[in-house]
Length: 68
Image (cartoon, rainbow, N blue to C red; front, side, top):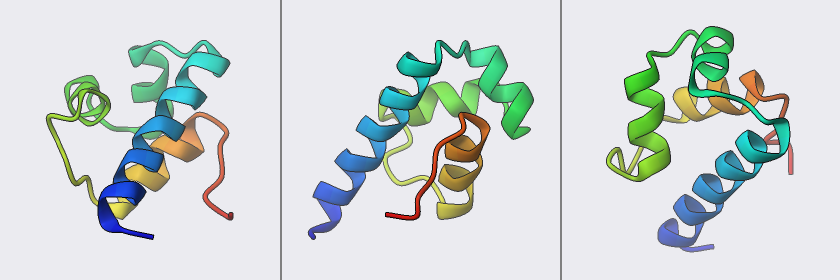
């Protein structure tokens, strides 16, 4: 899979988890330990290439998994 496709899949998966879990920015921030501003930048695409550890924290905070 190409790097661009992977980034788009991750971004879409994060949006899916947020929407389906009905999480607020505050909820995600509290559960992940990341600042709300950082989370918003990742979701908006302003941070185009977040660190893997950051993505793991976001996914875990919303009850998701990166196992597949």
